[in-house]
Length: 205
Image 1 (cartoon, rainbow, N blue to C red):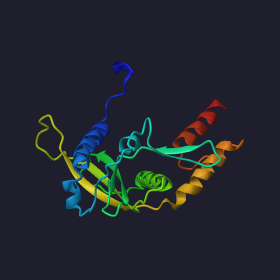
Image 2: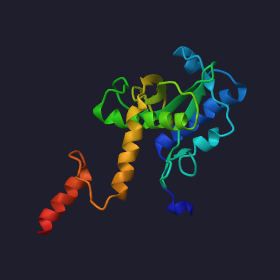
Image 3: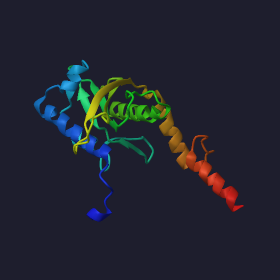
């Protein structure tokens, strides 16, 4: 793609790229990242022949084909750590800038949790032992500095999340049935686009 047509390189993407480089250093050495030690996480970044493939959300990712359906579920993880017993830990990087402490308590962050659970489900479907506890490496931009000085510093926090992927299988099947159906589903109450289209139809009348 020509450079003048490329999308701007977002701050979140930059943070993701730098975190991956940092954890890759420890992946190559088979060592535990200091942050993981601080939070008492007994694991190391996973060194696996497919790790780069699994992290490539645009061209690859971790995939699973639904039997008897022309459907492949895929997702690109940010990282995978591995415990001494071989169990995988799914890791997701997040970046923000807020004055208050970062948490996973906001209603809209249910999307983050579902994302984590789908990753856990995908890895289990590929035959891996996966810990129910995943981690969010959350980078919070520090705006309390007296001056910018050409750099933005982050406070990095690791937040554990115990996932439950029991909903994923049925939801995937429901989505497949919906796609195969000749009837449109009822719009969701929280769908802003549905509300917009409804308002447009009313105006066009």
